Length: 216
Image 1 (cartoon, helix red, strand yellow):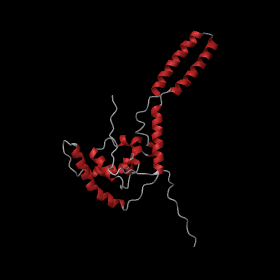
Image 2: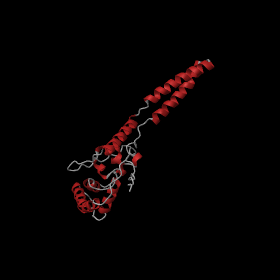
Image 3: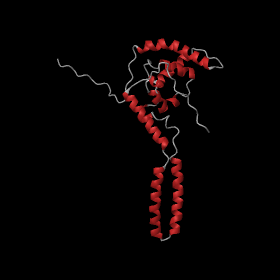
Image 4: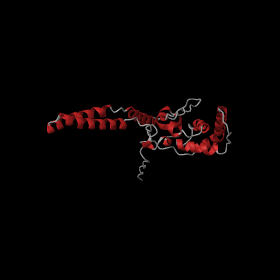
């Protein structure tokens, strides 16, 4: 079976993307770890296994004084070990989807990271694969000011979409037109909410520090 083709990242007309040193470091590290996992071919494991088989062959041969028996036993073990290594070292197809599991997944990133290339490589593409195209496009146009997470933004746009009729057979123009309508309705709400919404916590940032009491 072929792999599901993922949509390309939505790109804003102004090409805006969030810039944060802490998040950049987290995303780059997660992508690097996922790529390392996907690149595993079992070479190191096979070399270690081969060395163990050689040592085992010498031990059996010395103990039983029978080269044939040693070859048979080691051959069986080598075959079983090879099959195990091949099956265990196959690249994990779900690695990218789980790359950001340590911080709660791609959906827990600030909304702006919906249009961040590294976040898209770190599992965002898989995370939003089920979001309708018009809603994804609308979300990308509001993500720069939305005061919440990617999941919050997707949920918000989904609620707005309930009130916008959908045509049965949608063309590319219909999708674009619907996305613009979602933005037209949702943007004023987001702008108003952003004025009073608290900022999202930053990973690695210490919790609220208690201010020092002033001596009277």
